Structures are given as structure tokens and as C-alpha cells.
Image (cartoon, rainbow, N blue to C red; front, side):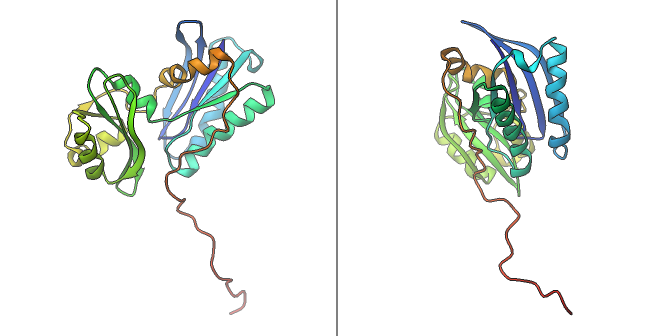
Length: 225
């Protein structure tokens, strides 16, 4: 089955085409551009590009997998709206996967790991995974020092992800170089069981974890001086 994978929860705008078989997930095409200000401009062309690279058409897709965050409001909704819209138009299921899982799961190597992405405001989105890549706690948003203390309590000895690199000094944990951003193959792998079973799609609820910066006005402004 041919599956489209998208993630826009971090500055890395990602689209990939993977083949999900009975016992494997194989990447057929992959595009990723790191630009925190151009999610809306980049994602659709990248989706078109991976289809072209694999000599495939939208009608060939059996499912869509989308990273549901956590992530900033503006960037995250680009990927989720794209996935939901394509799923509806093509009448195929769309499955959501926590984007941090696509960092922590592939980074696990027999020891607990802290996965973190940049949440701005000097905070990180974070979660802790055991040695098999199963999430132990999170996702949460907060100060790097708080995340580091909790990670150590759970036995984490290494940190991974762009947030870990940005706040390496505050975390005080050795860094794992990759994956720095959500891995498309991992997103597909984490959804593969549902894809193979033909499970119903997900509502693709975004994990914002905090309210957007913009707020509604509380009082009317006068229009005359």
C-alpha cells in the first residue's frame, strides 16, 4: 500500500511516500526543508514532488499519515489541514501520530531517551521514551530544566531532537545527533498496524499543549478620535 506521510510540527517541513507491506515500511520518496516561516508555501509542492519522484498519482494512495504535534499553532495546522483535506477528497483514511514519537522512537537504543522540539518562549515540547521506544511520559511543554529533571527520574541518559540541541546546556544530557526532526519513516511505522488493518481514520486533533499567542479583543475600539 502506498502511503503519504506529512509533518509540519517543527521547522522541518516534511513529505514522504512510503510503501507499507505485510512486514515492512519502505520509503519511496522523501522531501524535507527546514524553514520555520514557510510551512504553507512548502508542503503542497513537496507532496507533489514526492508523488512525481515515485511516479505515482494521488489516486494511488491508500492512506495518509500526519504528525499531530505538539507544535506551534500556525505551522502544525498546515500539515493537518493538508492531510485531512486530501483524505476527504480521496476518500482514504488519515492517521495521526504524535510527532515527538517519530523522534524518540527511532532514537531509542536500549536506554531511556528524552525527545524534545523547540516550543519557543525558551521552552520545549518533550516526552521520555524507554529503551524500546515506548513513551513513558508526555508530551508536555515547559522549561528545559524541568524536562531534564523528570527525564533523569525516569532513567534517561541521552537527549535527542532539535529542542535538545538548542537547549543542550540547560538539559545537561549527552546528545544523540539523529533524528533532529520527526522522521517520516518512523511516523509511517508507528501507524503501520492501523494501515494494514484498514482501521478507520483519525480526527487528526492537533497537540498544541498551550493556547495560541493571538487573543480576541476584550473591548471595542473607538473608530473616531
